[in-house]
Image 1: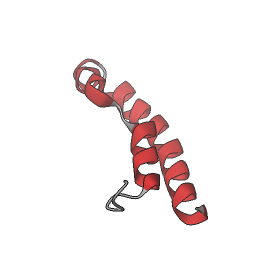
Image 2: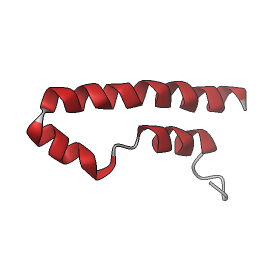
Image 3: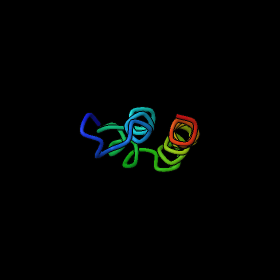
Image 4: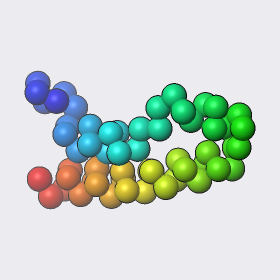
Length: 56
């Protein structure tokens, strides 16, 4: 970010949508719930990421 390689909007979106290591056990135990959780975290991340990208 400091050197301008990755925009701040991408870093902010990644921080919001990052499911981390908990996604793999969730897929194994409840795949449908893991997909819903991923979608629930992806939608705000996309909105914030594009919002920061276009409005800053």
